[in-house]
Length: 120
Image (cartoon, helix red, strand yellow):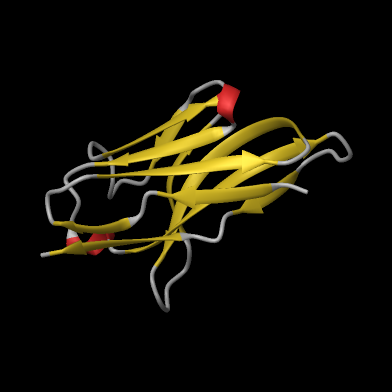
């Protein structure tokens, strides 16, 4: 069984920084893309940033230049460094990964989410 566990959320003042982490565990053969999404109440979940197994990245326009996604393949972990945070970044952030286990051809997995709150 595969699990994604996020950490690093919290409360920060506008202009501050947070670093989110997401570690995948279980019977993992390989991990393709890993990413971060966020979802505000009453709104659709939206992509924040994604990184491929080769290190290519893509960001939402709203976070370009402020957020950086990286991954440590040896640790099956993806990170999101968030700088210059704004109150509108406040919401729950979810980790996502496409993981191939030793018994299947791959599935999409989600973490439970971590709350980020930016005060003005």
